[in-house]
Amino acid sequence: MILQDAATALRANSALVALVADRIDYIIAPQSSTYPRIVLTLTAVENQTTINNDTQMRRNEIQVDAWGRTYTDADAVAEAARVALEPAGYVYLSRNTDEFTVEPGNDPGVFKVGLIFSIWIDP
Image (tube, rainbow, N blue to C red):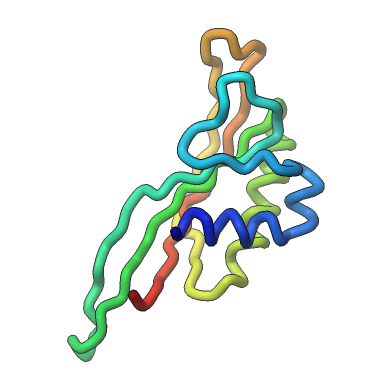
């Protein structure tokens, strides 16, 4: 459910849609991918007790991977995703990573900017 909510927030951002159109995938991109695109993955779910020890909060960690044929494309998609998700409430960018990947049959390679968001909810 949390990934679908994130995808809905991303699809509601016109600047992001202008970059990726409908190319927002869950967990893995199709093998014959068109770029730029986003891949969403739920990486952690943790229950947390508040300081008063009376309410459980749940921290969901999602990874938003922005892929592009150039670093500039991947970075622009990542920034648009950040702008789309952070105002959603209780959503915080925890960290980000950059990498270049060459996979068999994926010439000349693609760039990825990965964003890790913590999303706090009251279950």
